[in-house]
Image (cartoon, rainbow, N blue to C red; front, side):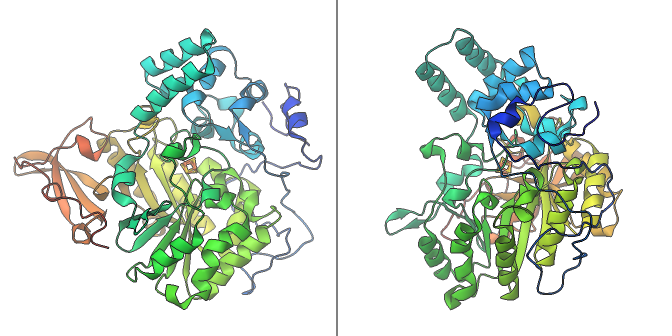
Length: 503
Ligand code: SF4
């Protein structure tokens, strides 16, 4: 199939029903970048960096085209999307079933620019966004499929869905029990404080994403259940909490995706960090986002894109380190002209882009994919930061990869890149006691063991500490490992997690 979707949303073989439904502007042609070379695209923008920037500022040629206003496509649109992508029969029914339990959302940019529909179901971005049958345990799948097939009342389906979700470990690593600080008036919702120097903030309006990843470890934020959600719109409480914790150097604004918020809303949380001397100790501002993959227009064409860049630049100019914690799973996400333009514009603000992603079966379980991704990132000025192990939540059964394989992929990939790409750490598990990196497999004192170490720990004293676990070829997570050398427990298990007393 040749892809040349001009000017709207439709394939060479399908009518453009969804296009009408979405009522998008006519001028939406977007070329597909088919080369991994960095293409310099003169910006089509008003914002100009105060430092002159690193890219061409000519407005004469090669405009990156806008893609219309952002519109979410959800499970309600599955039929039309399926028609567009030629997904039929059992596959479409499976999508409907799985999307009852796990959240589904996409948008036109993802459909038109990122997915190679000739390669479905194997296309990595398709796997990343579209529900597949194996994402639920057989028993759960058939339970929901049966209810849907006999058109059971919504209440009955909702009840079954709630039970399945509760079994999918909606808040991994004991986030709700151990990470949420308490104040005089009770828990400070929307804040997590797991590691001494870093506070996470979950702004209410940022608890959605431009599209949802099928493997999402924050899926519970998106299923419309208030009990499951961690969020706050209370900027004052955040700033008071930060002001009273002088050892906090880093604020991570996270979600969902904070970049779904209007710039003026994001600024309510971030501007006081520049203006308020009581927050001087907060030196590093991180923003977790997958907007560069799912909606790079956020930084280029959205109405307040220029304001967003100005906000980032102002924070940088205040002397803070601003890190965009970008989430890329595959080099295929970095091929379009608009994502490259977005990356250039962010870098021109002085912000640093770091990239992180889990290793996922069906998406990037291949060292060559990682090597190419990291090389592409280095070429674009992005710093490879983390390779994660798929977390023990949601559709883990579909995506998980044994730890030993994770380490093999990491090692084979990192061998293929230069030192600039070896900034990456991994494979790492964000587990209850902390971030644990798999360093390798060795035979020590006659025993085959995993070598591990803490990159972060609930107790700062754990950081950098190596430890050993019995080798287990099937293990996919920390809690499946046993201590090596006949020990009864790992050193971090014999005392209670310090939780928040330490902070
Ligand atoms: S971008 Fe992050 S929070 Fe959003 S769906 Fe993907 S993994 Fe989840």
